[in-house]
Image (cartoon, rainbow, N blue to C red; front, side, top):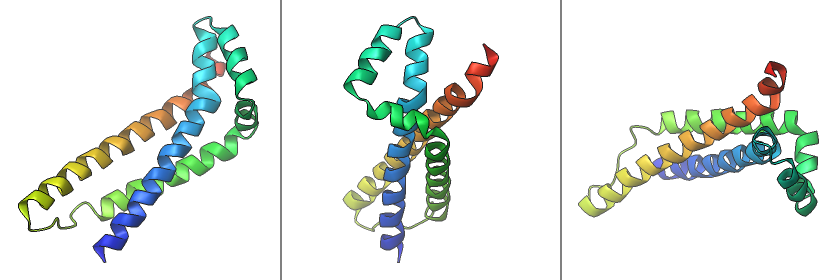
Length: 127
């Protein structure tokens, strides 16, 4: 039972991470580069990766999807927070290490999402 929950949690966390990267690339990175005066770098980036334009055009849907995935990932982490690790000391150590690593990835994804959200929806209104 716990193995299935962990596998589903890992899949959702991975999707949330990639969704957060999408928000970072669509909105935060170009805005950051332009704000530090590297507009030519943004033009070069968009010329090399024209998919960034598509991401920017669909940023609302991207942010909704990434937000839902991060929420589901957080709920899955909460549900499995007390799942038992194996009795074998070596496997228990790996289990504990992977839980900390998973938390780090979740927090990193959340920070990327919030950074992208700020640049996509808030920063341009403050300037």
